[in-house]
Length: 160
Image (cartoon, rainbow, N blue to C red; front, side):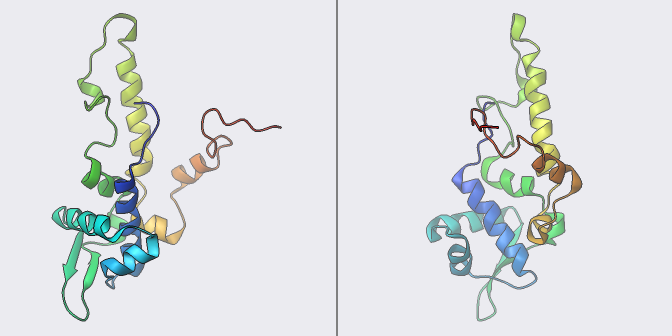
């Protein structure tokens, strides 16, 4: 699976959903979201359409119109928004890790990919939009953020 990669589209979708969570129960126009998050408006409109089709977002026309979350922010995980734009949270060459089979010495690598996906899920499934808006992540996510190496990418060298 290599590095954890978050595409621009996924990043924009999650940021748009967080903006809507912060405005709840009110509505925001696509222009307000685009301006607040620095997202290209055409890109955002396609993303909002995807989120509507997934029934995470509703829209209303008119003076009081705009976009709003279709359910409470506490019920929408980051993973749920991500899946709207990318499908699986983690795959290997477009395949689910559990569907892989490697020969010989690499056979156990499938278990590594499955474990890595589960670790990814442990954060993304259990952090809601409301958690992000409140600035208080659940304890399991906070513990990971506080790990010494969490804020460094592999290869970063810092002098002691």
